[in-house]
Image (cartoon, helix red, strand yellow):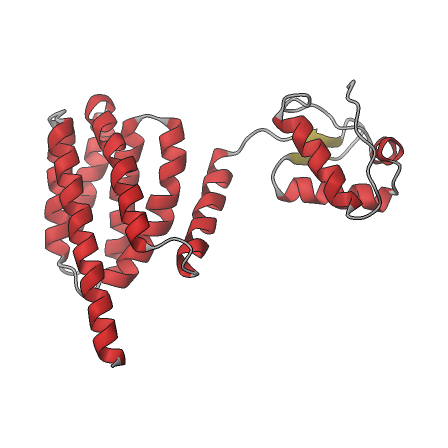
Length: 246
């Protein structure tokens, strides 16, 4: 591997080493599955101690940028991308940002409408029978009065996950993971006392029928009505909360 690493100063050396290697990975100088130099070699190149190199490697491993392998042919290797882990990390960060107020539910609703509308249109073109059946099964579950609120929320997530999957776009799927896996539960938690579950199920069925009929316009309209309903229930939930506090 012919890579010229810059020397680093001693302050935050481990962080600088990790950033240097990360940059080499991101710009393609280090390829997936390529073996990194040994700890001794890295220590010599960066002119730091082996413990400092180990700390840098720990940082990279925590970011899922490298993986280690033991044995005679072992060492540290550039990791293959793990879409599921990256998407879950995005979802976790998004949930935290909503919790601390960096992202408002109004922002969430707007972003969801724009992104999921694209998914809805693509799903009308690309959906499979299996994906339609998955969506249909969730609508049927949502009409069950014995379903708990937690189970309804889980079904809601599965319905929208199936819709996003039906779009057949990997990047949209990654971006929508934060909405479906993180923000849907947050929204459900806030509005579950003021929403009508049958209304939600009816709106989901409208989306399903539009996708099944390959009608992107009807699907987008149904989704817009669902987001509007959610916005209204959110406002109602906040009003009730304020009244109780007063």
